[in-house]
Image (cartoon, rainbow, N blue to C red; front, side, top):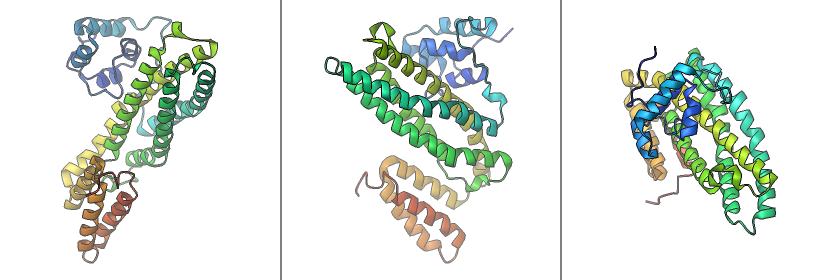
Length: 306
């Protein structure tokens, strides 16, 4: 018999422990992906749900499984290696997104052209999806070029944790949260994807496509946030806590300063530190030099003039 569900457990942990619970969380609209760090009781309170009733429903899924008409996740990310996780995200989620996003954009263009004059909200849906698509295309490209090779290298031991960019994991989590907010706004603008409100067969196809897209993106972010990044973050935190150098702390602080909208200030501080180290500690100075150039090119560099 499974132990009772602890209402203090986070949604992300509950979903990672038993993937069959994900279908229930989707139906109850409990954010187990971007909001995976939220406790079950807090999440239920925000949604106006009775936590004891939800706990009983989770335990029923654990005990009885899902109905035949419900999607049953076959993939268990906790049982996969880091390399397998990265490959799964690319081959299943990224490839699916690359296929679905252009199709949804075409449907939106048609629906706006036909019905936009009488339904101005459709134009907002199109704009929001276009913005989300741009963010996702940039995000998944960085994952495939930077994040996933780093994760694989850490697992294989070919990359030293001390050499990994500070803030890499936190930045990807923050980008996931931004995607989650835009995804929620898209749902609200599209009337919750209620098929009974479809204006025509094309609009119905659009709503069905957006719902599938949302569900897959939730699962995608969950597998990264609550499994992959959790595991890789633990690999990075251990060595840094055990033997962090003054330079490690400085670089991490400068990155956090830049992410807070002070990239120009951070780049000037990096330049000052570089000047002091370039003769006595050229290797350490090179790390600061690389960071300085990255901060100068940051889109946030001119956000706040000082």
